[in-house]
Image (cartoon, rainbow, N blue to C red; front, side, top):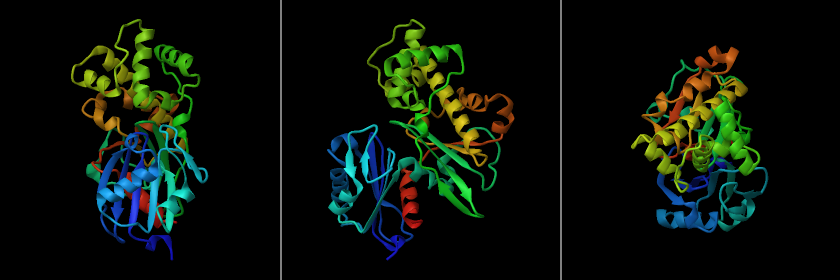
Length: 324
């Protein structure tokens, strides 16, 4: 029996903070019983899945595909930004699954991009995408996910499974250099993810204040910083968000150049959608294009912010099972 005939299916999108699960009862069926479970509420992924199945009131799935915020290089998974650790084979046996596929969460999201409805994305500059050209995907959340789609043949696509969030972050100005150096003294290597994630927003805020010799509260959360910036118009928090947007623009531009992503760049993750209304006029797009002789190349590339009420990565997980 081929994988794509195995139903019903459990589909998952597991990040460092939340695990999202959905159910597909038969071929062509809509996703149902979509629930979000905080990872911290469950000791391991098996217990989270069992809690979901009980909550959804469904039986045992025949197959499952889980997108997870971690490299998937073998049977053992040990999450980078959460304490869950498990064997894929052992999890399959515990859940009595005929098939279990585990892939990177942003690989799963990439597999959903081509079917993403227009109303679930907002364009930020650029022109129309070039047909059948590489597509880039990047998204700050608990960590920094990076993936993309590479065309092959006349109509095929392959999703990238990599760890581009851990590239070394580069400075664009003297102030950014000072901020990166301040963070380097604390952590050592300063990756893009070190700054472009939830905790990174806090570290960036504290580093920027230290470099500029300004006093700020040491106990602010990422949500606090965003609220103080966008609602209270706090100058220090606005400077932090603007530097965050600038760094993200630079890294997204680097990714677009690396992949030749003339098919466009998608921004996923949980942070950027919360910044919409401000983000469109931030330094993001200018920094995305600020690549010297290749500015005109990047000016044509469209960027979209993914704004979906339900995780598109669940559909990507279904696509991964369909294309074994």
